[in-house]
Amino acid sequence: MHQYLNFINGEFVATGKTFENHAPVDNRVLGLVHEAGEREVDAAVGAARAALKGDWGRMSVVKRVELLYAVADEINRRFDDFLQAEVADTGKPLSLASHIDIPRGAANFKVFADIVKNVPTESFEMATPDGGTALSYALRSPLGVVAVVCPWNLPLLLMTWKVGPALACGNTVIVKPSEETPATATLLGEVMNAVGVPKGVYNVVHGFGPGSAGEFLTRHPGVNGITFTGETRTGEAIMAAAAKGVRPVSFELGGKNAGIVFADADFDKAVAGITRSAFENCGQVCLGTERVYVQRPIFDRFVQALKEKAQALKVGPSEEPGVGLGPLISAEHKAKVLGYYEKAKAEGATVVTGGGVPDMPGALAQGHWVQPTIWTGLPESSPIVREEIFGPCCHIAPFDTVDEAIALANATNYGLATTVWTQNLATAHRMAREIEVGLCWINSWFLRDLRTAFGGAKASGIGREGGVHSLEFYTELRNVMVKL
Ligand code: NAD
Picture 1 (cartoon, helix red, strand yellow):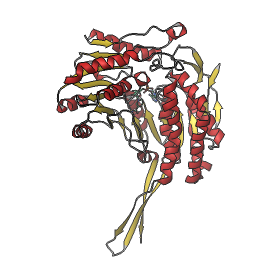
Picture 2: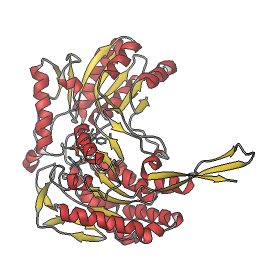
Picture 3: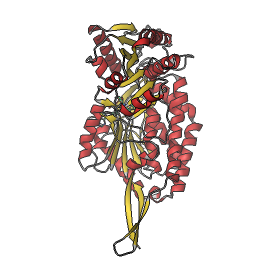
Picture 4: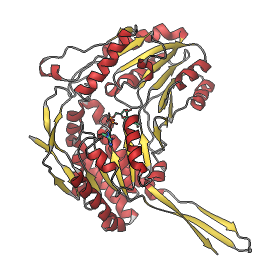
């Protein structure tokens, strides 16, 4: 049986304690994950600290950048290994993982290598009271040992989105992948060794959150900063752990994102866009749209069109051609999503389509499948409209005015993303200005330029990563003032 080992100081490390990793498509056991205890986490932190003082800490930026390019090239050379590992762990369609997860996983190393190589630091000349001058300039040094705590929905992509800039800035990292998706982080250990990244620079510890590797890592005093993607309430626990020693955090958290469609939108593009934002990755995307607001003149037509798109989505296993919807990640998550499906019915929602479990043949019947689901008719106070479900579902409500659309979009504690569909430039810019989010897409969704800031407002996060913004978290800026 396959064994998922920890990766500490360049070695794959077994522990006496294992748990099973299951495939979401049919619940078969994929292998055994070796859970890291306090001893292994301590060893990983020790290795990461030592690496900061070793070859890695002394390496020139040029050499570091070359190594990160080699990491990206090696991921691409082993593209199929990463692809198979990712789809086995997540059950997502092969077409999705091969176009987004793996290529972006590799690109994250090159993009941040380029940024670190090219970005200047500031410098100011100033007149001094004695008639002379002084020159200030800034130096960047690495933050140190960075803990990277990851979710399961886009495992390689979201992990490298943090490991790429952290390493580019000269830090060392300890990754705690989600217990649901241990494979690609482990595989990346092989890549690091193959291209000659020094021992201790990249480490992986497996396990759960509380009472396990996640907690041991985030409370470890040898960790200088924590970057985390996951649920808002997990963020609260990690922030409490980080308070000891006042260590900085960078948080990308949950959302309950609004999609707003105006009557003047390009109808077909808006329907296609909301189909993606509601159902891609089986709705397990933090940026996804679970609240859709459609201007009244096109409301009925839009609901009908989205229903047709949802019903046309082919549900099935990753490798089957034409599949648009995979399973949810786990039995536990399926129970959570189906709980919301039941609650919607109990609250009197109109179930436009879905609301249950599709019939799957043979072994697939053991998988974590749910139907893509659309509701209308619920009040804004309903938990279906307020809480993050993280499944392939959305509630659609009508609106009349721009003011109303802004108020509806903002009536949430979250503030991650929004997608707005209109052909009126003034409306688009007003929405962008007034909706309280970190990311606003106009006539698009999940279109990313990695040089731009990424993150959430309100309960959806702390800080921004992406482009030079990542440097804000992964480096310490030192000002040097020289009296001339
Ligand atoms: P999660 O919070 O349950 O788990 C994320 C990671 O945190 C896992 O590795 C888990 O083991 C670890 N963890 C859990 N409790 C911990 C603790 N007390 N201390 C330390 N580590 C702990 O999230 P998930 O279910 O894996 O992912 C889904 C969530 O992630 C959704 O809420 C989604 O919106 C969010 N998400 C946000 C973004 C973003 O960019 N804002 C991106 C993807 C996912």
